[in-house]
Image (cartoon, rainbow, N blue to C red):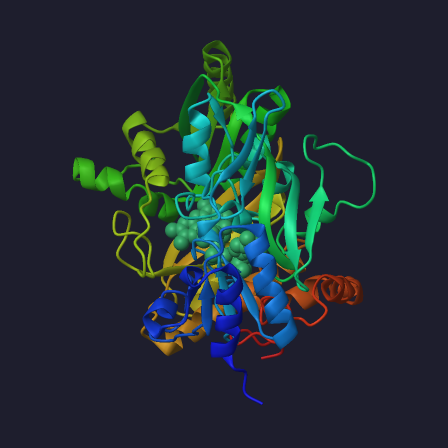
Length: 489
Ligand SMILES: Cc1cc2nc3c(=O)[nH]c(=O)nc-3n(C[C@H](O)[C@H](O)[C@H](O)COP(=O)(O)OP(=O)(O)OC[C@H]3O[C@@H](n4cnc5c(N)ncnc54)[C@H](O)[C@@H]3O)c2cc1C
């Protein structure tokens, strides 16, 4: 029997209010895609969109969905790059962005409890009034919500000091796949050896275990000073050597990333616009180390000088300040234009896509060559490689291998996914991970996840069934066949 979505919409509206439930086609259209690479005219429409304002609203929606056995897809800002929030099989889309309040700010214990739909930027602009901040900083922070940052385990600029988001999540409230409200983790302290760390299971869960509705995070006093530098190296290995020595020296580093020269040209678009010329780097440069320091003035000054001394000893060339400022600024002013499936115009007019992988730090030069080889073999134009360092005070990487994609050309899209598959399998073959910040989403679905976790698949699927017995939570993501990637082709 066909599902009667009108009836389901009415059931939800009768309990949480008709003003939160949307069924008209023009209201559903905006939820048919995220920033993943897909044909420009492909639409996956949800049958109902609901914009709850509380945990209780979400529980009502999931309980009704559970009874009818229909899909539930949580979403935040829809900037995900793997189709994680795309309603692959229709169903009920839960837009969490109406749940955007700060519920408690505890300045004595340095914690904040928020509703999961608040964006990182909004949270930080509120915290700033108290001299505090939440140091999690993807470039998409203006649109990315806290719930989605947990659900994707996205990257932060400041990973080398503060780590990935799990380092910040003290506890959370989840509406599971039955509609039960469960509190996981602690409320005021990060440290516990009791029970299991169930809240960490939600990190990278991509909406497949339930809807995160509230989160308690640890926060920090805002630092006094920040200093940003870029240093050009002849190889990635030299840049890695420099970072390892800087870490070993015990300096106050806040962020580290290493990009190739093509990625550098992409990011210095703002410099080109301002000065009317290319941002120049020394000839023979392969890797550009971008590093920031934060803390009190004296500590920052000392850390910077000492770090640059190490870089010079390793034949690094320090890049001029105007270029550094242009890069840092462009990284922090991305504006998101609703409905536009491309990098914002302030940056670039062309669409891009990326393979994301974690690569062992000693293999970055080899990975760069592999990136070029696989992209060229698949006829893709290279945008560039960027290595984000995501573990506190150690060089564990999350690498973006970006290429341009024409989403009006189906063959180009297929070649892109072939490229993504090859890069993912390569990362696995050298002991890395097939995805490091985007997630498995709809792009990989189970294709690479099932290879990466072949020994624990039974456990993973049992865990999924405990949280979501009817498998209504975000179907088509993380598990099962991928539309784009087939293993064995
Ligand atoms: C221009 C641009 C720049 C970017 N920069 C970065 C970057 O620097 N670093 C980085 O890591 N990523 C980056 N991204 C990718 C993306 O922004 C992040 O992955 C971000 O976490 C997505 O947030 P969102 O709110 O838009 O999530 P959405 O796309 O709406 O959702 C993403 C996933 O989270 C799930 N989800 C959402 N909310 C919840 C919830 N409350 N409970 C359970 N599951 C939920 C969804 O079902 C989906 O699977 C960028 C993307 C773009 C387009």
